[in-house]
Length: 455
Image (tube, rainbow, N blue to C red; front, top):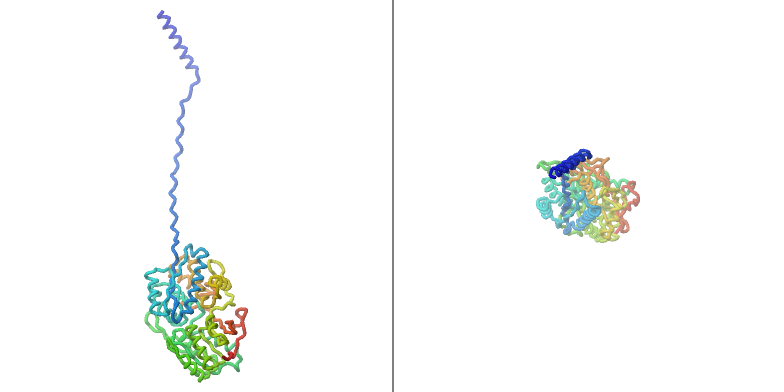
């Protein structure tokens, strides 16, 4: 029995082994492949921080005091330009901030403000002030600090004859050469037998006025260079020599002068055919004309170096008629400039000014606006507010590659004075300041009124 059980078990085991041998062998499960090793993603460089701090511009302007009429107009011209830059997205991706301080028409205050702008406020740029009187000392501060000093209104040649390297002037020429414009106007537009035989000279004791008179008379002018040495420039024979007229009266008035009636009476006694009166402000021009009217002095012609402001015409009314004033700008001068990388014309300036201020823009707003245009082009072109970089870019401008403004094209000599720029002559006629000379430069020229209408 037991033997039978063992036999059965043996048969079962043999059969199992046979079945196993005949079965299809199964492959061992294959372990899934590990994913191929990949390089860790490269660390992304953090973008360079974008400088969005404002480009800060400092300007010390005479908002009060004797130069306040022109000073406030310069402020408005600067502000309009800065506002238009910011409306277009700023300059090189940065907003522009204009910081203006009132220097009260005072030299010491101007110097203190310039020092503060540079050393405490750390402004990026400086926009210049009005008048040679304030600019002459202020430019010494900026030159020492190697800060670019763009100048809107400082015409005395001595400002530019000191060997300074950081000055650029945004008007046609130095004051010593202004007299060429009214003299050539007389020569070209007044018949030879009516041209003045005698002239009177009355002027302010001011850098600008003294410079204009020196150019008319042909004086020698001595300047002090930056290194302390002196330089003499001869202006002989003088612009008046082209007229062949005799100078029958000369008088300079001091700063703060108020005795206008006595001066006017002296002018009347001399009875010159033509009066050249370089004044420093619209206020002086108004005071002198009022006095001339009071004493009844009626020369055939009057030239003044200030008086293009609307306040001059408004204050004097018909008494302004016939007075001629040189100008760097006129509404009819169809200059085309650049702003924000695009064309910006004189008419665009007039429209923008009217929209912002509700009034007509004039020369004293257009000049600082043009300065702002020029510096904006320099910063945009260089991508920098480094003052030496900007100076180098501006000094590299040429007739073929100028700075383009609503005062026309600018490029400069080594002194910072414009090359190949001339003044426009204007004249008050029936309450309007008309463009009278040169006669072939722009459309809209009016005939010169000569002799001047009597008071």
